[in-house]
Length: 205
Image (cartoon, rainbow, N blue to C red; front, side, top):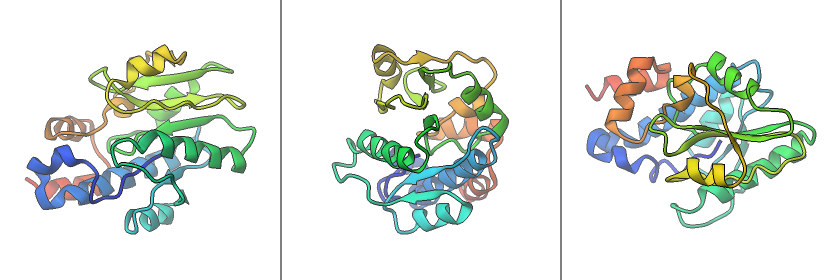
């Protein structure tokens, strides 16, 4: 799971959240990590981040913090960070499958995540599109396969063109609902967000 420095994260929420934007970004990540750790299909959660506030908070939940992520421009460092995290995960668990998950899924439900991970075919790379159908919220690969992340923008098409199978489960809205805008957050709140997001969102009403 990648997380930008909080000062740079979720910039499209700035008109709505203002001074609370960094708090929201952290809350999203805390609720996402908590749900992932509670998923029976997840053995370990790695977070790739150098943020001095978010990193220790997420590690305190039980995530493995990977701080030596590649340096680069804030807008193009996502996929190198994911590839770096995948390599770190392979060193920890060489024979385990991998999944990259967005850090902005505040309504994530462990049971829905388990259904998505359980739908990944043996030996394959597979992805789940986000709620609008343009991006990607999850990319998974079997043991021995390369993750090959191509997140950002129209990543649904890039992952498909790169040979990953699209997962088309109808009943996993919490795994699809990432949050980039105020409208996205409103939809996540209707699904039911975790306690960290709920607390920060209440301050914005």
